[in-house]
Image (cartoon, rainbow, N blue to C red):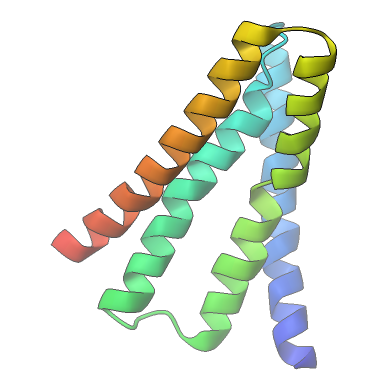
Length: 125
């Protein structure tokens, strides 16, 4: 159990660092109240987790340790539902209704679509 926790933590560290850099990059390239950084990591993360789950199911190339590292650790550290929820709260509080609807709708729709796409790409290969 301790070994799996360390493996997940290492994956989480990498995912968290990439999430931080993605957020900084998004803030650098846009000044919109739309939360582009969180949106980007959640959408990219949905695609990546779809690929990882697809690989685990189809090819069994992902060992239990790699599953913990990639899915629990990396994807858990990279994506951020708590930040997503905070962004939604702030958009409501600031009465950015169009951004609120766009953010929630696109995040959910594209998130599910990209999980499906990631899994489908692996199944087709």
